Length: 114
Length: 110
Image (tube, rainbow over all chains, first blue to last red; front, top):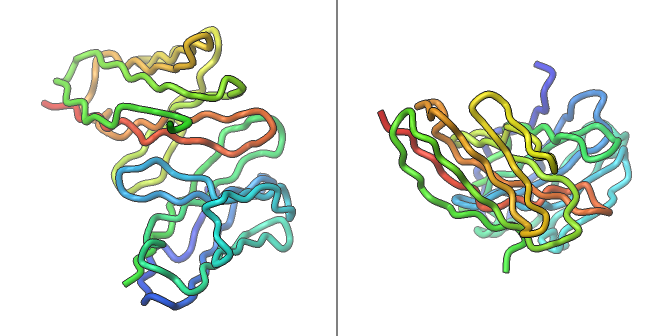
């Protein structure tokens, strides 16, 4: 399967714990995006990378959230001191790096904070 | 006011019906427009891009009205398999992030 992959697919954690998610984009795509989706809502933008550079971050991305893409390939999203309000589906997408190209989404990581 | 607004539905239609969804956007600098389809508990997948001249793909037709700042999606001859949430997506100049509407839920009934 050469699509976007995300791990883990599901994560259940207790409030206050740290969690880390991984996204592997389509290999030739140099843009990578993170979104968050809650029930009944469309995905909300969190951040995106062009190669290893983080070019934009949403105000939704509090200081408890950090994202990296160290070698311009896979990316990680870490949430520190999780809160119940962090429970959501975290979607990763990737696209080619020229123009407004289609974003391809991974299957998501569903986070439940107890 | 949200940047991208959609009627959340659900729209319940019988098989074979024609159904249309609208989506309005608030930023006149919006650059690109898309319709994505999302099945329950799955990731969004591109249904079609929306071009200024309008475009058609089989039973699906998308149109853009820049003057009134809305895009539309028309589905003809609805199939049971069209049941899903249809997400309106807008991008603006200077950024490549997607701005999504809340989605419109469609149920096609036998």
